[in-house]
Amino acid sequence: MEEYLESIAAATPTPGGGSVAALCGALSAALSRMVANLAIGKEGYESVQAEMKELDSQAKQLQRRLLALADEDAKAYDAVIAAMRLPKKTDVERDDRVRAMQRAYEGATNVPLETMQACSDALAIALVAAQRGNRSAIADAGVAALIAEAGLRAAALNVRINLAALRDNSLRARVEERLEAILRDADKVGHDVMALVEGRM
Image (cartoon, rainbow, N blue to C red):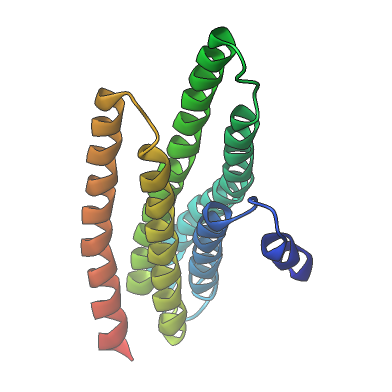
């Protein structure tokens, strides 16, 4: 963990905020798994055994996906840097560089957008963990929700900053529409989780 933190702290553009956003989502999924696993095999939770096992399985897959997105985010922005460094002495070189940059920025927009969706999925899992998981770990379910939402909103910042560099207006409109939809859903689910958590503490 310390090695990873130092790689973030280093004077290099990657890994950066996009990778951290994905890590937040992965941590959220792991916490929800804990809340589920604390109910598995425990007295008083007989009726939710299958559901908690399924939640653990889904959250584990999501956790892995978010860790992969942390790496993908760094690679996507590395591609932007590489495109920026292409030669631009001639008209042909300049045109090639612009096309390469647009492809790179599209990738650097899509990855955090996928991170947003994955963090939204983690938030939904945190809600189920809070509803059905071990009640003694209700605060952990709340933390899972909060860091999933933090990861989602952090990823949204990266979507927006890279989206601004795209010249394709129809693509920009589609991305903005999806971004807003994810944020709307997250607002509702996040509110529901925290209301449940605070009501059970």
